[in-house]
Image 1 (cartoon, rainbow, N blue to C red):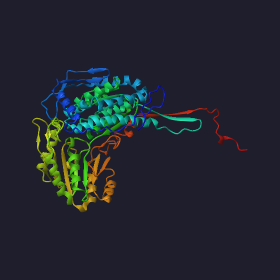
Image 2: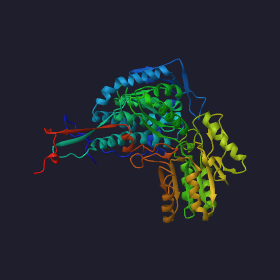
Image 3: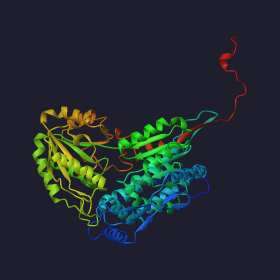
Image 4: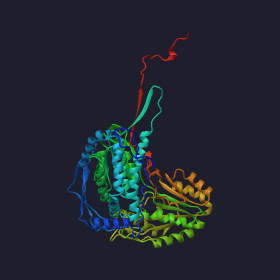
Length: 552
């Protein structure tokens, strides 16, 4: 264990060595279960809250109040958030730039201290609240909320502080009479964070990691995540993030983009969301490139069409468990969720039986009931999209729904874990991102394993996560090499989800993003602008080099 930060006026400081936050079990009778249940009921039954925008030192409210409702209980109004317009984005940028000079000049120790305090607040005082808000706002069951909102967020904050220190320690070699050193400056201007609904940890990390490195942020969370976003701002404020460093605005995406991407001080985009939106933003930035003082950093983690390949040597029970967990945890609303499977013919019958057993035992309903494995999808738009894919599969000559397939949105947006079997490896649900609890399976002849690897690589535009299950090591090696460019996170004999901060840096290429690996030093490097300083102790006084001397 490394030593703690030294409490001295001057000295060498070390960030506490990070350890992944332990995941609590929430088993019946546990104290954490009782505390979380009480907090959930308190937040559900309290008077509706009013969530402002946070701009500079102000909590900004407008006449445009948008309701916040639990996806699993959409008649219930938890509160309202205040919707803004272009003027609020402009003020947020001004507030960020006003805060920049002082924040960027802050020592790294001071900035790290703030976010380390935020980590302790998440892990302790706010643990039940951030988990309950995630259950209410995003319909995560207690365990999914725990590994996301409590643990992954805590890990991001602690590991980022440590990774940032490692960056500061990366210094060039010097020479006799010369001292070379690298200064890791913040980007010149403001940065823009756009975050999704599905992970509270991502919503916090995108603005926080940039702020840690000395940047000032305009942050636009997803409308459907505003309830837990409010709790994040409470944590940031209590941790000591100065006014103007992280400005939270809730406006229409194109409206925000029109202001942000036309501003000369725009210096970076940190994005998690759909591939189509990210491509549009990149295009807009490119078209406006001459307007900016500096070339903006563009970092994005986008869509996925994540795969499981099961060789004939794989254990069928291992395969079914990887599918059930990988495809249906959090209703498949993870960019890493398994959504296409390639199963060897000789083991398919056993895999199918185990999968049927798994799905028959899954309970679905409100996250308030801790026995529910599956809850609802995020909103009606998502429900309609996913249910349309299922409906079309039921009537297709190339596919059939063999498990699940029922959808109901009367009380909440509930879709059963659904398995589609297709005869066509290029069927639409093998290619397109659905972002819901739908797994499509193609059964291939045992003799066509190599051909199937080609299909895996070429069927989808994405390259985020994937898994190979096999007991034959030669097969594992072959798949690992052939699928080298098919996934940024590749799993051997496991589900293709569940990356842990500091252990499995996360990200993909192709249509899945820029692969800048959140949860590692690599991502933080994108948010600094290094300056090399060379200091010569004894300055030369003669321009002449030895080679200029006359021969004797």
